[in-house]
Amino acid sequence: PRLAPISASLDSTDTQVQLQQQLSARERRQLRNERRESNSGYSWREEVEERLIKKPKKRYTSWTEELNLDNLAHLGPQWWVVRVSRLRGLETAEVTARVLARNFPNIEFKIYTPAVQEKKRLKNGSISVKPKPLFPGCVFLKCVLNKEIHDFIRECDGVGGFVGSKVGNTKRQINKPRPVSVDDMEAIFRQAKVEQEKADQAFQEEQQGENALMSDKMNIEYNVDSNGVTSSVLDTKPKRQTKKKSDTVANGAKYSKQLVPGSKVRVLSGNFAEFIGSLKKLNRKTGKATVGFTLFGKETLVDLDVKDVVLETK
Image 1 (cartoon, rainbow, N blue to C red):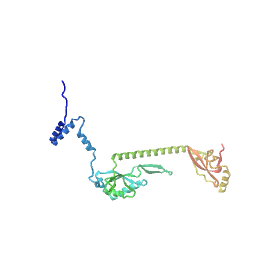
Image 2 (cartoon, rainbow, N blue to C red):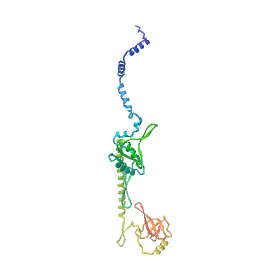
Image 3 (cartoon, helix red, strand yellow):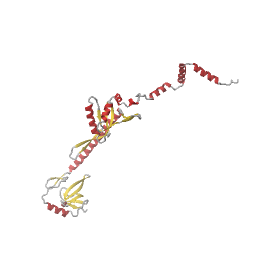
Image 4 (spheres, rainbow, N blue to C red):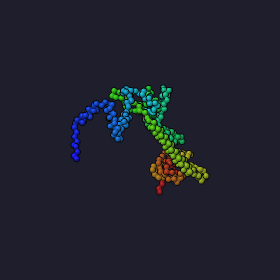
């Protein structure tokens, strides 16, 4: 049998539009929701909720409220970064702490300057401790910040302001402080602890190396001569002589004719007898020669009489 032909006209479309116009707004909304829910895998409610979550809420009703620094007090105690001089950062932090404690006794605050205490042993045997800042030019301040405290800290000597961002519009702009998160501060505390442990370990290794070197020197520091008298090998101070100055000058002029700085010399007598070294300095007036000997991989300078030194020809 033959199928009836399918035909369409604009009258059917017009009738649907007329039916929708006859429905109320509530009924049309229900039909629209039913069509959305009929689509599998699509939830218009979730889509609307995601849009609302992603859309940032307007915090301030006007730009003048955003410029009000007293609103920072609503955040509670936070860590803030204060810009100071790179050379006098520690001194500025101490002065700022004293001034804040004197002018705001009822406010709790804490000032933290991450630094590594570097230790060095001086020539006189004492140990000097010098702090090395991890973040030069930055001081961390924890307090409840408002406009009064903000303006007071900015007026302190050596303070350049707070680390933040520009807010406002073309009429007025200010640098609004930005707090440091707790995770970032914990990372800074861990970094300061690790750097301090590394510095202490390096100082201990240096001390152990110096002690080992001194113990090696002490093993051959003393020699016993033929009379049984112990004398120091590393004694660089010349012994007192009873000869006249004129004799010393004559001997120095006699024995220093062939000697020039940089030549290889050999010691004839004394504590460094048969030692071979390099001539560093030669004073013909006083008859003294400065000779450098290599001991334990390190050069040691010794002052000797010119008559006790001869040119090594080998």
